[in-house]
Amino acid sequence: MGRIKKTIIIEGRPTWTLFDSGARNTYIISDMVGSLPEKTLAQGEKVTLGGKIHQFDRICIITALIEGKPVWTDACVIDEIGKDEDERRIEVLWGALAMQRWGIVLMPEKEDIDMSHYPKEFVEF
Image (cartoon, rainbow, N blue to C red; front, side, top):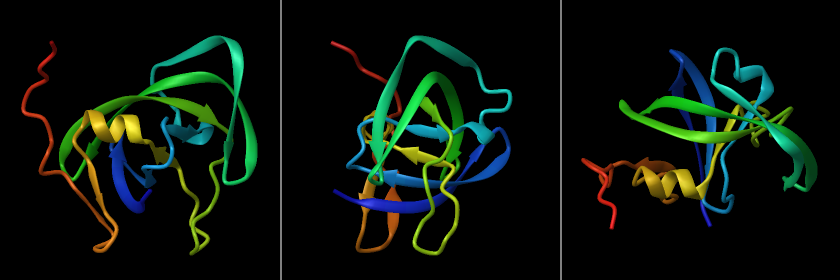
């Protein structure tokens, strides 16, 4: 399991993001949704993040730039993710499924991410 903090760009806005390979899904705080496309779920869901239970009933589609490369993913909308050890508010938690889709590899020893596996095309079988 690894965790790296980094600024990404969503809708032209710098966004403090936690890349967390221990989280399956991606989460975004409600303050960040703005004009992102949203969908209300038929039934609310619960998730435990940072030892706290969160309820959500909305998802949205994030289009972002990570290291200058365009990416997209779906994200569960929650009120708060939490703060990092420097008390900086985490706005997006980028989960393992989205990292796998975009070839994002965590490099904890450098406290950075590796985008060298970014797909040039998607091949489906």
